[in-house]
Length: 488
Image 1 (cartoon, rainbow, N blue to C red):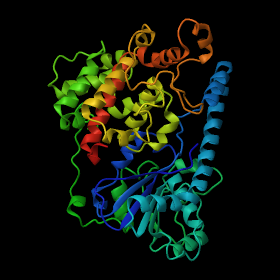
Image 2 (image 1 turned 60 degrees about the vertical axis):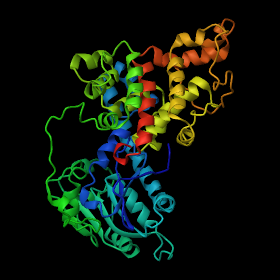
Image 3 (image 1 turned 90 degrees about the vertical axis):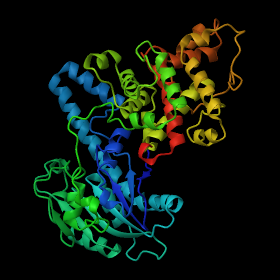
Image 4 (image 1 turned 90 degrees about the horizontal axis):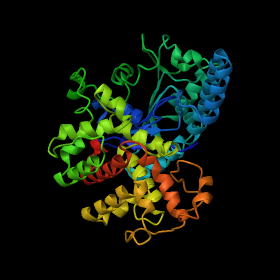
């Protein structure tokens, strides 16, 4: 499990003060949830730089293989035994995340300072906002500060704890107050039932704490703080909040039951803004699947809808009349190709696309391919023409069919493809089955061809997957060309 924070600066950056937001347990665990958290930051905070600090908090519904198999085995023997084991496993999981929050808090400010020096060197002060176990991260970070910080240390201004899943004594709060250049706010609610599960500790998020600016949020449940963040900020008087801005006084217009096609701005808006040439590339690859019914290249709405329908289970999508959002499709593909553990390093859609596309190029053409590294793929694209890039994508699309790997030896290989290139032992290959099957077939077909065929069988056997991957590669290029922060 990674012990590094993934920082993400939100759009509308300005000023010399940064607000740092830290989520809690079962939050920020995937890209869809990270996008939802980003939307909770009100426009009234645009006078500051706003940064999310994502950490591997875990999720109550994510079981590892050992836990899943153990619970299923117990459930076959006795349903109550399976349920009891599941509850015990989740209690252990939360306790592990709680310990991780404490340990990560000790590295928060050092990692944050490194990020700021690289991306926002003019920032002189930070305000910290932590929710639930994120509050525990913040408390751990501040208790670890020296009593007299050095002049060159990062200055901490206001600190806002929201439903903090951590004990905090009055003495500790007083000590923290001496180490920060602002106020320590404790937003709490006695109606927060979730914090009762924080066994062994009396959480600050359920009570007033001495030497804090206590902010009672009557009627608030544990999950109310993020969607009602502006209300919490207004009640606390948090330094980074400017209620006098006109945008803060205008109620947000909410559309009930929005069209799922038009509302998918990461896909619909991107297709609308990109060029006809790139959009035609998306259409071309989607049409390669028998599950799509694109009759025209000019209908933005139908193109988006067909893309959504191709994601997930095609029969289920057709039956209900709608598909998955673009972010959900990317998560589905990442899970399908065994990339879940690498998603922590992805805070933006374009990073997730880069991860997925680079892994597919690596699988098909080996580590020597110019687009086979997530770290280098953007840099490589700077020196590549649009025509050259889509030639690579076409080759990738061709490689995602099993039959392409059983062609005759006389068939010419692409010039950039390094046949038989060595793969490092620690690289994560996208494999479907054990390579124990390879020896029995190696006498018929070269081993490297069998490896590639088995790998890409994951795309070939799933309806639409061999079309989705190159289509995502085209969208990745469109997103990179636009460089629109709202679409990244």
